Length: 112
Length: 113
Image (cartoon, rainbow over all chains, first blue to last red):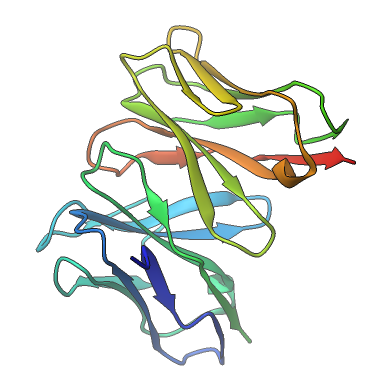
């Protein structure tokens, strides 16, 4: 039981490049989330998926897109990376939205 | 808009002390409150979840309380150990769809041997 896994662990992009961050959970959870963590700003919700087939914007969705591929997987895509997107990205899941959230180990992204 | 603050920002205590971490939120209409710990360079580990109808939750040496009316939660750590050194974050959910899951900035705890 791996919990929540994220790939890659580290990534360096040049401005304008695109990439997809992958997240998978093996706990049969319905809800999944993407956060970013920045010094001085704390953790902020980018997008969430309350259940398979649904996605909604969080606090800071601009510049990102998401796909809930199936119940296990929730990916985050940066279409044209900008230096302001340099951050640590965390994926999380919960059985349902009001239950406790379980986090992945994070992806450290640097955009130069 | 919901805002979450945590005091103190950093705390250093000798091993064995009991300690209290504080979390305050501005909108008392919360669905639940969750405490996490984060080790340097790692993800978040859930410690305790308190639903809005509950007053406290306990897990081992940890006890979390919730006073919705005053917008406060405390995390009590008994008999602290060096392994408790980490950043502790609280987060509140203000509806049941996860949209307004708002985190505090965290308290960085150091427990000295």
